[in-house]
Length: 297
Image (cartoon, rainbow, N blue to C red; front, side, top):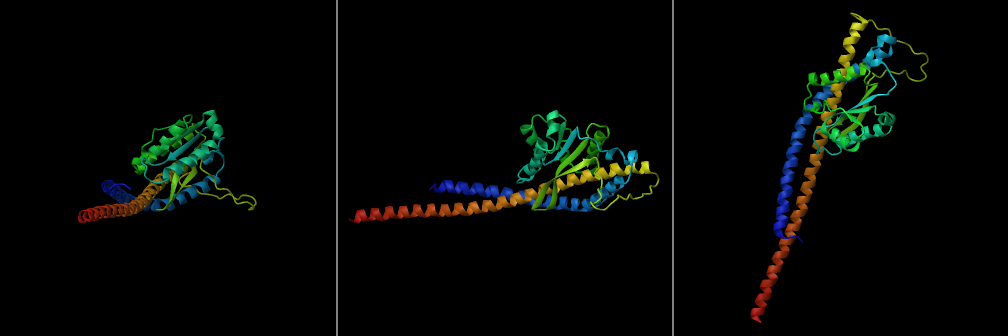
């Protein structure tokens, strides 16, 4: 058994670590509260706008449907990978990275082999994962630190660049991988098609598709040219806020578990310390008794 000094030093070290994990848990809880409020306010608005956009594009024909709704053969593909810049958040980043890795190795394996697959990491953890493991894939790091700021104007500027790249034909399909926030203990990786805008499909067995008739004011082209980019920017902001809230929820949960584990280790070490102390006292008493008996004998 370790001597008393070693056990005391170990207890002191674990208690110091426990203080750090407690502090990180409190910081993450405060950030989670703000992040959760932001995504809960935006998500219903974003989902409804996205549904409205899909309905409108599904009921327009030909050139009227906008450049953002044109479906092309996915020869050149961009995957926007949103992760965090820091770790200590359990399996949060790993789950998102593995989801994208499954796409790279499966659905988009032909594009990868042809050199037509690009990953745009937002967050250092996603960049580090694919830089080390997938050296053959092109990485666009121009917006790597976007998640340092979640201001709408900054995020909208990046989404505008991505939208323009699609409209110019640089990419035929753009997908976004992010973490969808459910609650502090539950976040799950999600991959959604950003462009082209997914159209609403009629349920099977409904017969001939009936098109809705929309009246546009001031005009169809003017309205769509403003409406579609605005909705897509809000959708991209939702991806960022979802991942932000998920990160802090995952880190708070991980630090809470780490604090509990530290408490268990401290209890075990204190038991070991007391055992070692009792053994030392017993040994000393035995030596004293033995010495007294020898002198008396």
